[in-house]
Image 1 (cartoon, rainbow, N blue to C red):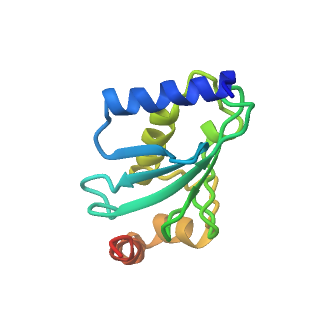
Image 2: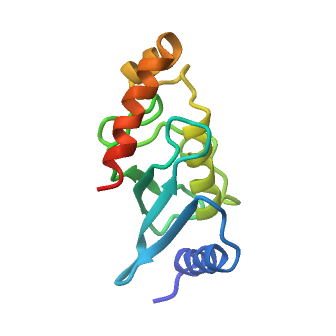
Length: 150
């Protein structure tokens, strides 16, 4: 069944294939276009460098008018990621726009890894370390990077 949401998801997928963005990838599950698996590579020159982080994106028929539910599957230690893997990211909440596609979502998440927003933390411990003890923060992030290779 073709719906506006499903047609849009196919366009998003084709755009990711035809015009790939460095450091991100994503594709719908073979049996369900409404559920995607994605990978974000940790940005260079950050504690996340060399990490390979898996995410899931779950869409409903209101996409692109409403954002998908995006969740890290890989363990993540970051000020804007809850311990259950869900993200605190403005474009996935109050700043959503139907102009965002899957590529824009994944690029924004990769950018968040590079530049956390510690004023709106989802993980208070990570935010505190990021602000007060960058060395310990980086050590904890490196643990998640090493875990992401498994």
